[in-house]
Length: 407
Image 1 (cartoon, rainbow, N blue to C red):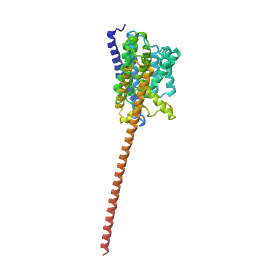
Image 2: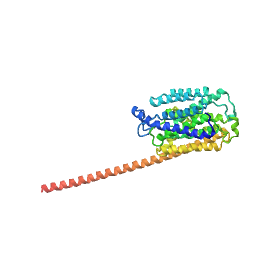
Image 3: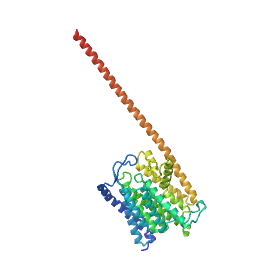
Image 4: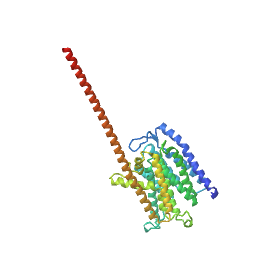
């Protein structure tokens, strides 16, 4: 069945709500099973600050909603999907499930991510053919385009895995990026990719009903890796689509496509780069877990409010996409530099404000401790004084009594 423009909005809406319903309705069952089988993430009061054990199998719901909705609508409209997309998603799904339930070593997890990236870039033909004039290079050899695409996919999988540290954050950032890609691919009439993006958006929104603010379930590695993988593929396809000759005369043509693609995923990507360099500068492994991510710093500023952190970074993500679209006629490298500078200026302000907030908090704690100490010392002195006075009076009374007895 062919997809006519008149039915496009209805088809995309149907795909979105089908993914949303499957995701939303499956989560209560997943929570119940996780509770019975004790498949929970236990707080450790260091990095995992949630008050009670919470299941980490939200990725199962995201995967189910995404894959089912995408498959139904691409098959119904007889659209050609990306080769090896489903195979790669399945492989990531099972790897994430094992990591969420039994724990998978970082090396094995990276190896599986590399296999998925290899499948989709070599056999699925998701690759770059140009650097868009960056560094004076336009067309690039096929092998180089595959390598760059491979590195982009593996990087974004891990970027979303690392940014998933606050309730709703990875889901909100993924939802914003997915909605942008869904709208743009629909305008470009690349309907299969539009269905992929809108299905992901629906699945994420269904998940967010149970993860936003006070989380009842976490995305886990299953969800974060799937989201990062799908968005990386969509970003690469978005860049290549803007190289099509006939689109250059359309209003939705984006000259700085690589920069705009980066803007959609900028927060997890550049935060990962900053954290890796920071850890290496401290002579630590770049994969060592700590509290140096942007969301950890914002938690200190917003007094551990996950809701405020998520809303702040969500608004910031929309701002970066809007800024990149406003400057879409610039050269890609120039726009990437502008976006990077803006991001790191925001980060520096956050770091400075966090230090100031923590100093104020330490001073308040110190003053409170001193007040409590002074109060306790005063009370102790008063008790000692009263006791000594009482004893003195008792002794005087005893002496007087004894004198009377002697007389």
